[in-house]
Length: 395
Image 1 (cartoon, rainbow, N blue to C red):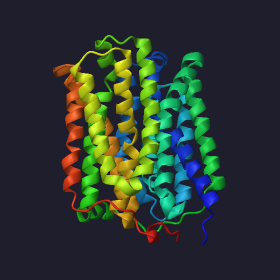
Image 2: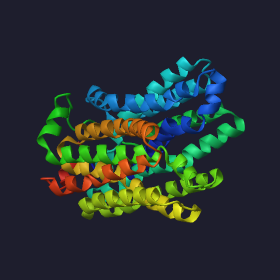
Image 3: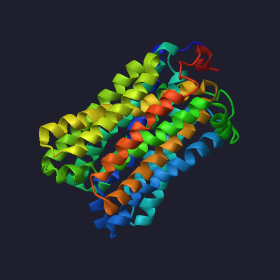
């Protein structure tokens, strides 16, 4: 089968739109917890389950969805998952009880875990081998763009018209993503049928996969331990609330830049890029912890932090794919599971640290976890390298 480069890139853009809709859906409640809780008459702590549940469900279901759909056309699976995102958000928009909303958020978690597991390695089969790293960066650009544009836009819609129209808008976006995938994505029959036995096997037999999963745990847990509480940290430094919003926007823009910078580097400098991420994150967290900051110095630090974290998803995804090119879906499902579990764990660890020690303690914990990546990179017995051309050949 001859692969059309134009259609391949259109399919990459369709997957990127799907990732954007997916991550906007997962993170949207962060900016709307108060009006949702007031409307549905639940406490702030209970409303926060809208954020916790999808992360935990995604961690549990990423490998399950990948195995359960092992014999099904990947285009169909991705379309079903993104369609479920659209339906779940529309259900939330019209829900009259929090139980219905929570059930919809459960479905979002399934979609996040399954879609990301498959989409992370889909570029291998859509574009020529020498474009895989760049295409993967484009796909994961949807994650950063959701944080910078999707969530703030959804929050603005919620502030102006109510939280229900905001969820309805994201639901419609999911359905648009579904239509784009159906139109431009080619059929992608599974290259091999994955079983549950493949998950422990790929972890056990590939040292670089084990290293990549450990790096994911350290980096993502460290980031969310600290970043979840960056607003109170900045407020303690005397940064005004209005300025904090600007700083977080700068963080997000830097994250998009970091994603594409990493996409240009990882094809030849993957190990060095992982080390650079570790150093940038640790340095930024330490710098924010040691002194009081005004708006300008805090902006510089958050830009550095954003550059580092923006490079994380695409870099570690490529590490995993290069570590096990013949078992890309199994390795990716383990990666996605650990990534989402680490998000929930980081927020939990950070909350405990803030209550038991101090707000600043989360920066030191996050920085130490980031630094621990360096010996893992140095000790990896198998260096990450570009997957062979046969791994990306269509069936």
